[in-house]
Length: 213
Image (tube, rainbow, N blue to C red; front, side):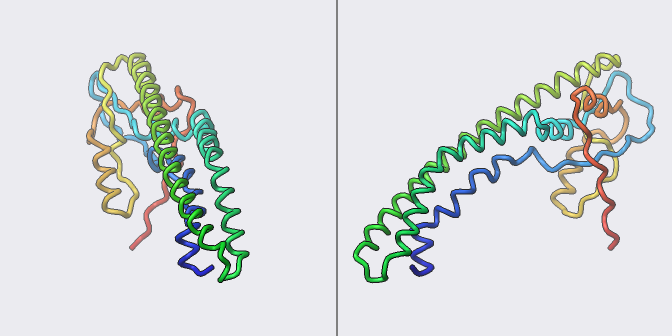
């Protein structure tokens, strides 16, 4: 079987493993936090790195475990069709170039490949819905914990903002995202550490210093 035939008929075999890719994608890459500047806290106002807190919870075993199980469940649904394609591919390769069986097998392989792609897209949509539900749940948990921590400190307002420190990124788009994560430039009481403690998750490791040009 030449390369073009292989891609046309059995290309779904390579694509089939893609279901798990993206299904375990976290909310975003973890960001290291630095201690907030020693400024006088604004009365009644707290700040929380919501993105950091949600990322830590989302990547915890409590959420990553069920997410991995869901991926395995959806991949199991596709496995019979993947196996069928593999068997068709092996049989196709075993035939002589002039065998009359090659044309019917090619037609069957194309149909099965299309079926695999269609089913895979549908299951990827299911995974997306599952992950979205987890994100909503994590946000609710972080929000509830932030209210509790803030109330214990006598703070009535919590603003979502990363610590207003320098950040270590070397990509313009990422740098802009980091700026947008910091609507509060100074002031307020940073409760991120206390919220992470209440959530029983570890903060991100310290980010390495950017390379010297």
